Length: 104
Image (cartoon, rainbow, N blue to C red; front, side):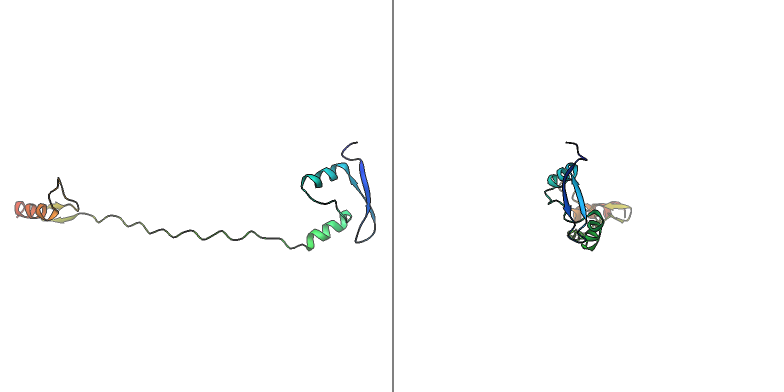
């Protein structure tokens, strides 16, 4: 039995016209877990067109992330660069005082 051989003949539920279901169609519907069609090909298209399409739900909102803020730029004072971090464990205030004393 080939895929195009007739498996069964049914009457369309809409127009009572006889239509054939082939072994290939039977295998297709069974592989998808679907029942065999109950309408002829012409009315199958009309039945499909009457079913509203399901749209995918919108994606969940992305979690808000804090905006990137660049680190503060070092301040210049009297030609001395005052760093924002202590150097070799010396507090920034002491470094600034030394710079001001040198460049006065």
